[in-house]
Image (cartoon, rainbow, N blue to C red; front, side, top):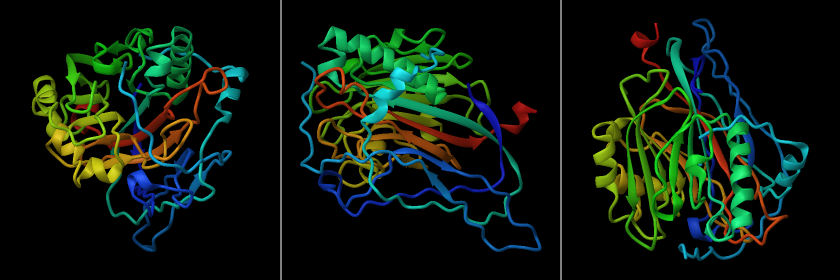
Length: 354
């Protein structure tokens, strides 16, 4: 459930990769595991020197195999309070990370202390060969899905190519499961006003699930939020915006949050030839696209496809986490993605929270 935070400083997190989306090799350094940005008080009037907020990186084992980009085969996530066991934690040993990571710093701020709403997203794509076509693997994927949602503390959850996810989380509200079993869910306490979804043209079955919701903690300038789980293809988006508009109306313009497998890196979501956010959502440009690290796909990790994105003004990332591949020690996985969680803050509506 969302929690109200007090922001004591501005946050800045940037991670860089010298290579292009489909050509990242061993020298393309991504960030796996949890990245935690610490909050520091703003400098006083008598001391205006900038203080850097260090990034703490929890290292994990390195197992990147730099190869060509995968060719995905087109077909043919409701919150349960489960505490992972030691056995399920052990499954996370298959992590992929680079040996280095950029550091993020907190610039000096002159802004007065303001109320902030904290929101956490989570999404995962086990891929259809497991979570749609193999019944035993589907059961295992749903179990891991519920455990990871609980571990992440998510408020908004997206499931991609995971059959049965929309009904798997007790007490949560969910969309239906649309093309390639894409669904989006919100935690207890979030009110769903409208839902919809369908296909994001083009490149095979490509899913879109949308909810118009009212969060339990009001967000400044956002009476409602437009939340989405998305799975565009490997080509620029040609349709889908009409679905977003029909569900969310004007909320999509400056109050949208989307998670999923975008099949393009952060730069491609923001603009360029793909320009995915503009083509699908429109309105304000993204305030952030996080993470921009290699999350796809087992057995050849090469591509920066999985992101959480919002166009809420002054949204600031607090931390993100990328888990390793989850089911490779139990099933012959094909094209499994790494699970991703992002925690961020947005300005609260002080009038409604007072």
